[in-house]
Structure formats: structure tokens, C-alpha cells
Length: 109
Figure 1 (cartoon, helix red, strand yellow):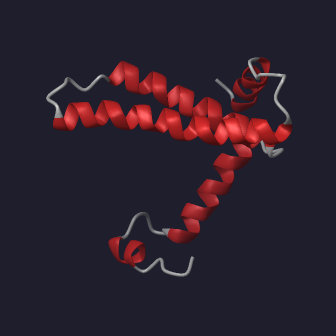
Figure 2: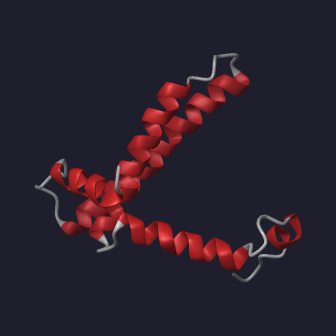
């Protein structure tokens, strides 16, 4: 799947009654809510002796991705641009891959 196809499909299912500001708020709340659902599956697995429900977690990750894509689009960014910016940020932060010392000394970023 290419990111622009996914972004187009997200737009197809957007609530057209929302203003731009409402869409940003909806996306922000959706990201938090769907990430919380992922967190809940992991919590149940880790602390309540449930089986790790991988299929449900992956479906919720798709929902997180939907809202991330919606937010990026509303801010006039393509998902590929968001991904690229994140790669650049991580390359600067961890040029040699993850290093605990660099992680501990990130103050002031």
C-alpha cells in the first residue's frame, strides 16, 4: 500500500460536516483514544493474564494510523513527509542507532 492511496482513502471517509479546526481536534482525540485501546490490550495481556490479542492490536494500530493521517492531511502534510521528517529527526538524535547515553542526555531538545 502506498501512503498517498491510504491518505486518499482517509479523506474519503472524513466527516465532511466538520470544520478544519474540528477535524484537527477530532484527529487529536482519535489518536489518543485509539492508542489507549492498544494500551488496554497490552495491559490485559501483561497484568490480567489474557492472551496477547495481536489481531486486535494491529486493527487498533490501523485506527491510530487513520487519525495520524487525518491530522497530517489537515495540516497540509503527506504521510510520506511526516515519515521522512521523523527519519531525519531520529538520524540526528541517534546517528549510530540507539545509544542509551544519547537517550539520557536529550535535555534541551
